[in-house]
Image (cartoon, rainbow, N blue to C red; front, side, top):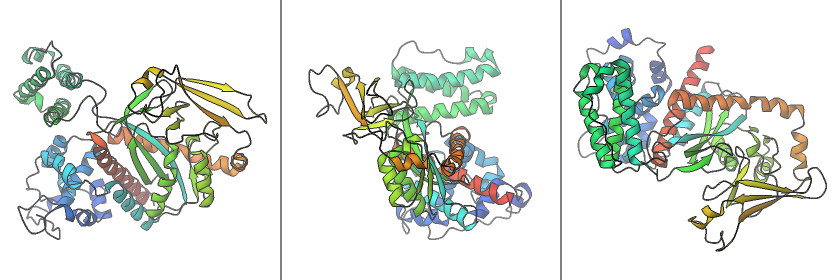
Length: 484
């Protein structure tokens, strides 16, 4: 049960916050900048208002997730730190003497309370609203791109995944005192997952019984991750195949297994929209949705900047109809005439087409000469052995076929207006701003743990994306306010 209104817990010790949490503390500034009551309004329907035990305030639970993202901590570590870090307790609106939650509550909150609430759009719209109110967003230009996140449960067997996490714990311990090696349990020699799971539990118990080692931050962080992995496995989460993750391609020779986040940012580096998809999705398809979400958030858009992935025919038509200048260089492969657009998408990083099963073409053959009146034809070849066992082979693969190809026709006269536009000085000047989104993607990955999904499934990735983007937007807003 939750009450209709949140109330700050008054305490005779509350004055300590004025001493130990200075006015320029980031968490104090966030509390002053954001009215978090919108979280309560959104989540009311997920709780009973007049029956049962008092629930942990949903705003506090959300703030725990925000702290996880800002400081890139595990559930256990963020709760542990909130016991002694007064800036954390102040941010969580707790009295200094209040007891903290059990870390397992965060897992339940993510799974039970945040499902179907549209958290990603809600949090981005809130930060854009704040940025507009503070006069931070002054232009009508957005920059678009996609960044990938590897699945937490990668393409490894359950045994390999458990071995990797227990190895990280041992390595952290040996760096402190190699003589402790004799105290740890004997490693398993079989490939049996149950034996490996039992071994991991023994490692956890053994390290916990050596408090002088378990309390060292470098060891504790790795140990907490191992505990979460063992707990997740007990809840039967798949380690070898995240049910929602898919294979995507960064280049023709490298791939990843996970998710993509398609992002739009303003020139002031505020994220204005995001769409989270599985890893095999094409970047260019999400330009209209990112523009529409940005406009819904309250920002006007008259210019969109992106790489060549966004120069496909549909995007050029869409931006023209909506009086938006598209700063995206033409890619002759994307602008060609082709069929079955819903089954084959161009991957601009790999320079090849990908079928709907996520398989990348391995060879390209061109016919006809470039820059001549006659149309050129490009044929992409797929691995026939993969086609034979593909779940989508019906209607795509013919039994007994020796090869599977996909062809497009390149028209040299297509998109003349866009070609003329990209040769103007205005286009070239605007295109220089594209680097800003690459820096934003790097910030998400390296400072907020966005390189790897923190849990399994698309819902988990959306919650992670929502809190990470909310955090980086708030930090950027505070920085720009303080620079005024």
